[in-house]
Image 1 (spheres, helix red, strand yellow):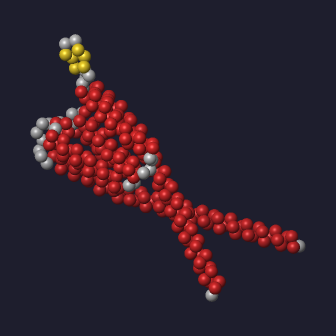
Image 2 (cartoon, helix red, strand yellow):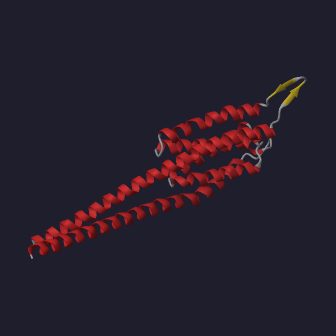
Image 3 (cartoon, one colour):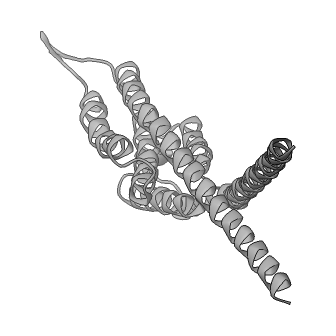
Length: 240
């Protein structure tokens, strides 16, 4: 009875060790994935800043007043406001990668970039696609609350600008009051697909970590058994 109990305890200990090892592998892989995505967004933020300045220069050319040459206000908006939007997400991506605050800050910044680009293009419908592309990029985190943060930001932006400055977001001066609801609906539709995908991605990472831990444990058991057999064979040879 004592031998059976001892074997059971050893089996339970081995199972717990595999679980702990799997959790450690999952945590390490998860943190590395989050940090890598943070770094990707840091580069994207800087690229969007440069692109916004280019858009402002192309679509908001220099204005002439007699012999005075002045840069259009949108160029300064792209340069200064773009720097404000990008600075904190980029700093957190490099100083505090993989942390919850970092990815939610990046989500806010990315949606603000959508808002700024829509403004700079005069509310062109094509620029609104930047919102959906941003949501797809944010899903790389495999962390569905980040998508909720992004949705709240873009819906609030469309609501407030639609009331205060509708031409900035829709390209017309008198849009229907419910226009922001239409845009919000498509954003919600998009994240309703992305959120389950994020959950499946995390589940797949956990399954891979568990399988890796099991394979490591199996390999170590085989190595131990082989070592025991080799020592036993050496002992028999020395006795002879």
